[in-house]
Image (cartoon, one colour):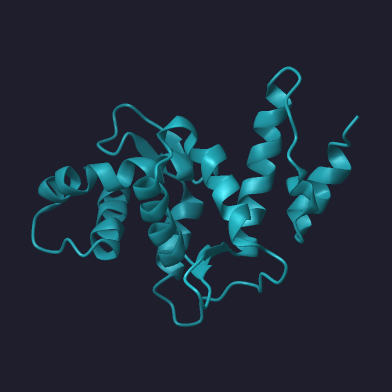
Length: 173
């Protein structure tokens, strides 16, 4: 396994508290938890599909930077005033597709929270941060443009720069 794969496995090991085995055993123990997160990372262009990789995907430099930054006490993300928990549910439905289940969504939220992309509000709802919307919106519009007659959600209304840029570029007709 290459160093990038080992870093990602180590990240998942810390997130899911599986600290007692070597990387190959860890990967087998965590495979069901890593798979949905990998789909989310691929959707957000934080990873690329790679059949030869033990994970099934290769992390991008941006994902590795997010993993590194999470260890820094100065790592903060912008406020999410106006973002609602249901927006995260919509995002996960789009990113996970048919593989979306309560367990897969929950595990993805735990991983995304560790990266600083979502947080839990006072009553326990998972809420997306602006940084997640900044990753999601361009990826969504890129895919929607590829589909003939692609349907655009009103995600361009999200209070972030990416949503406004995408809305300007992709005027609904």
